[in-house]
Length: 124
Image 1 (cartoon, one colour):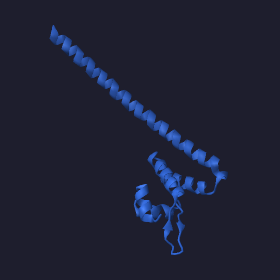
Image 2 (cartoon, helix red, strand yellow; image 1 turned 90 degrees about the vertical axis):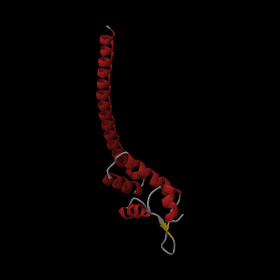
Image 3 (spheres, helix red, strand yellow; image 1 turned 90 degrees about the horizontal axis):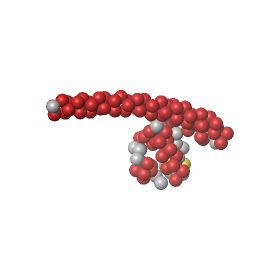
Image 4 (cartoon, helix red, strand yellow; image 1 turned 180 degrees about the vertical axis):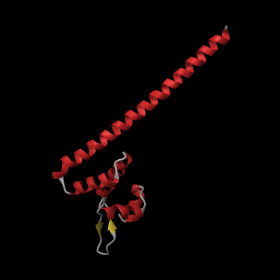
């Protein structure tokens, strides 16, 4: 498929796709007229890149991952290490979010107790 259709299918602008290509994230095939041609493999790869980005992985690490992936299976350990680093970041973020929720829940419980005590005092 050509770049316009591919752009719609992956939900990224044509400029973004060109940027991905320039940065080496994406390597579409070319026609004899030098037009980009994308296939199902490219769809899956862009979906994967988008997911890495959604996890908050820094662009420089996504670029490194992409370069390693293009080198083949000999780089599996290095790619796995990049994913482990991102996993640790996400676990830290999840813990921080849980700490925030615990704080909010505690404050809500305090207010509920205050309301209950106030209702009891007013009933007497």
